[in-house]
Every structure is written in C-alpha cells, then in structure tokens.
Length: 321
Ligand code: NAP
Image 1 (tube, rainbow, N blue to C red):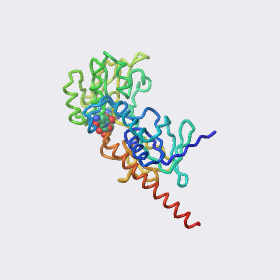
Image 2: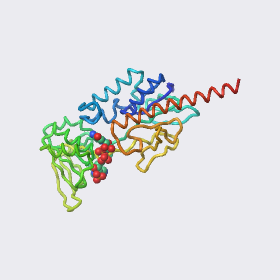
Image 3: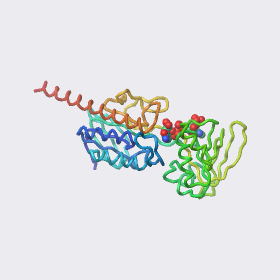
C-alpha cells in the first residue's frame, strides 16, 4: 500500500545546506521535512576537525553536524531517515519517491544531495572495499591503529584527512599524481610539519593488493620516471574528489560538464519549484560556509515561490466565483 505524506517543502539531503534551508523554511512557519539516507550532516559529519567555520576556531565535524540538526529541529524541521530515489513534477506539486516506498508531496523541493566519493577504478578497489579500502577516515581510521596508511589525492580532503589519520597510523603516505597540491596552504603547511606524513609525488596507484581478507600492498607508478614500485600498507583512503548526486529528477535538470546543478542567484534550478544548494550546485567553492548561505537563499526563494503560487490560486478562485 502506498504511503503518501504532504509538506509545504521537502528537502532532499541533510548536509549543512539542507539543514540550514530547513531551519529557514521552518522559521517561515511552513511544514518541512528533510530526507537523509545516512546521518544528518552529510560530509561534515564524517570530517574529523573543522576550523574554518566562522565563529568556531575548532569543532569536530560530528559535533557541528549535530548542532545544525538540533538547531533546525528546534524550530520545526522534521528529519526523516529516507533515501530519496526520484523527484518529479506533478502539476503544481513536486513529488519525491523514496526507497522505503513512502512518497513525499510538496509545492517546492530543495535538492541538497551533495556528492559521492570518486573511486580510483583500479584492480583491488572493489575487492578490498571495507577490508582496508575506505573513503571515510573518521569512520574507519581507528581500525588501522599502529599501521601504515596511504591516502590518495592532493586536495583539501586528502591532505586534511591524511593529517587526521596520523592519530592512528604510525605513518601516512599521501600519494599524489602531481608534484603540487591543490589543498589550501594552511592545510598543506600542517601536513608538511607533521613528521608522520610523507608525500609520494608524481605517482599513481595502479593496483590494490591483499591477502584475501585485508589490504597489504599497493602497486605504484611514477608518471615522470615510469618507475614501478610497491608500498606495504594496511589501508588506503582515496580522496580524489566526488561526483555530484544530481541524477535524481525525472525531468531533465540543467547541469554543467561535471554534472553539478546549474542554478541562478536564487538557487532556482531549470525545473520550476525545484531549488538546489550546497556541494551539488555548480559553483567555485565547496565549503560549509557557502553551503549554509546557499541553503538560506534556497529557503527564502522557496518561500517566495510558495507565496506566488498561493497568490495565483487565490486569483484563479476569485475569477471562478
Ligand atoms: P578536489 O579538490 O577535487 O581534489 C581532488 C584531488 O584528487 C586532486 O588533487 C586531484 O589531482 C586528485 N585526483 C583526481 N582524480 C584522481 C585520480 N583518478 N587519481 C589520482 N588522483 C586524482 O577534491 P576534495 O579534496 O575532495 O575536495 C572537494 C571540495 O570540497 C573542494 O572544493 C574542497 O575545497 C572542499 N573541501 C574543503 C575542505 C576544507 O575546507 N577544510 C575539506 C575537504 C574538502 P589534481 O590536483 O592533479 O587534479
């Protein structure tokens, strides 16, 4: 039997953008639910330390996520543990279907679906996923206490999580395909100062090998010298970026070349009544600070959209009577 719930606004994804949007929608006294398939907070909930969210010199990602969720809930945001599977247009309604079979009907939808980690796509990655291959240092780092760990990538996530992993590992190798990092300078400096972090430059991981139950070594290829080598490790954490989770609407959504949702300044997407915020949106910067800004704008724009819709319905009724 189908189970249908109705709200003014449905938010898909409970990262910082979605939760902040929820806070503002709830404060506008609209009924609003945020659908989150894991735990509220999105990527930030799986981040060790946060020190660039203004007002908090240092806070753990999980605590910040919890504060976001509690704050929004206090003002009336409902958070449902649901995996959204499709968003589609049905007249003036925007409908979200979920893996549980529940359908959420609203007048506006805010997509805050973030992204999923990019995989290396090399032999051994799938086989050893959960057996030493992990995409979440805060979730799995402690399993590799006193072992040697490799991190792949040269962006903020790889370098920051590499440093975080030194809490557990005897040594962390950051393997980067170039000889320059794209991580913020302050994050780089912290890694360079850490005696337990070693960079392996101009190098790609070609294969992850193990003993059947856990990762034991990596096959490396230096793309400048063409040298091949092996590195003994107990775990590997690829942090090579992420794919935007933008493939959820039945109607075609305008996205950029990387699949990020294109919006205007009001966070309106190419589908009327569907807004987007946070990491899934095409923009220069992907930080918590601008995700919450996006969420605020999306919520206010959604409110204006709902008011315009209500005005239209009132005018139609007035003409009919
Ligand atoms: P990113 O900035 O896109 O960096 C990805 C890194 O992986 C790059 O260094 C890239 O190398 C490398 N790479 C990509 N494909 C690869 C492949 N197939 N094999 C090997 N290496 C590969 O991704 P991110 O670090 O996940 O960050 C994503 C966004 O979140 C960014 O906007 C970032 O600023 C933000 N973020 C911010 C913080 C923070 O502020 N504390 C923390 C985490 C993330 P090249 O450099 O050669 O392209």
